Length: 609
Image 1 (cartoon, rainbow, N blue to C red):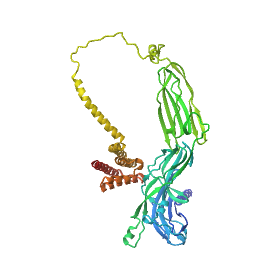
Image 2: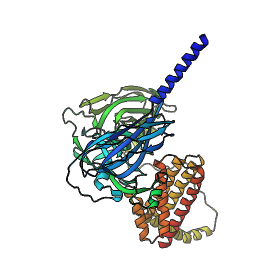
Image 3: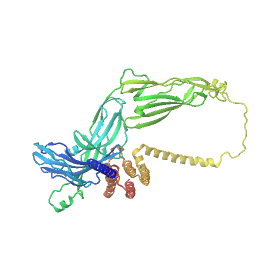
Image 4: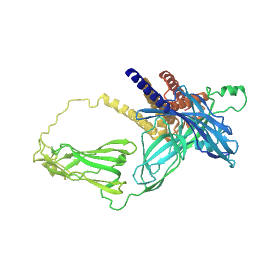
């Protein structure tokens, strides 16, 4: 009886586990909007959510009666780990356009998972009359307006009003409803009137599911920067532009048997559309700092800081060095902070300070700046180092804050060998004669010795006399040539391009030896792009692979070599943003091809020089 009861309880727990596992999976349908005009395009999503989507098979879409399918099915996946629990989702999306007005129903979609079939609920769409829109379409039957709504960059500022010197964090997010390939930067934003610090640079793009204006998107944070206004007024942040390849799945357009065969999802007939995604322009209203109650010691620091001073010894001998350290810590633009200068007695000498910075570029820029002064007392006695002040403006309280340092009293003892007849290394006789133009000639202990040598001029003198002008001429010529090269920045970069590329290629080789595939492709990309920037005289902020290829075409570089450059650049960018699927073997082969290509470019450009 007892054994039967245990068996019964065990079966109940197994059944509960099965129910929990089943309930963890869901398959649902959603649309951008349920009421549209007859010429409007919209998207429908079929999303499966669960702990895993790897065993998802046999997706069956509804017939979409009353609608024309412009694109789909486009697939996108996402994964999240929250408190150690893994959840994943797979979305099949379609771009549809109604064929008539009225009410239409999008039927249920089906998918198989774990031996069970899941289905979605049907959705009713109300199609109303509308005016024909401009249908100048891009490839694949999707208009430019639809592309702009499906893929775009949104720039968001942490605040629209700020004081001069106050941090404003700008975040750039990429929103997409469709599948995209590796995007490339075509234009970086300009931060005129700001000091910019990039926050946590992104090496890969990680998408999550989000909404914008009530519509569902895949969202990825692609760039974040901390801006510190340097002047008052309305300042603008120009758009950030990306070239985004959009991948769409083509539908069969005829009754050809080959179209029917190759339209199978296994072959995945797709088309890539090049689209320029551009962020919005941001306007920041920058207010000047208050002009009332400004402390005399204020030197432009804005943020929230602490200030302390330290001295390594309070007793020392004359001419012995003492370290006076000033440390400013807190949140704000650490790089622009200036430590106050110590006020020292006349007999204490100070040297140029050493400055150390420790900056944390997180969501809020913080850190510390350490300024070390080396001071040397020259005379014995009690010396007082007065208190100094450090002032800053706190934007949170909108008030100036002044912090006073500690006053130090140091006891300076007479150094070994010092006596009353000497002061700071000078004798009393020297001090008396400091104001005199002519000092006495030493006449004591003077002896002259006649040197017995009848040959006054040696042979080496004549050699040096004739060789020296020649060496001087060579040095002058070399120095002038070096000055010309250094003044011509473009020529200097041109000459050093090969050396810089070799250094980057060595870094890429080391990353490959460590099996660090992602860093390998990043270094390889930097080697190629840096080489082209220096060799072709392109500024880093303006560099694009298209611009480099156009400049190489001017040199009549063969088309096959141009294609190699383009393939290398696209592969490097793809691996940076795509999942890690590269092997060391393929990376080794790719490295050899990249090195060979750079050598071929260099040889060709040197011939054309």
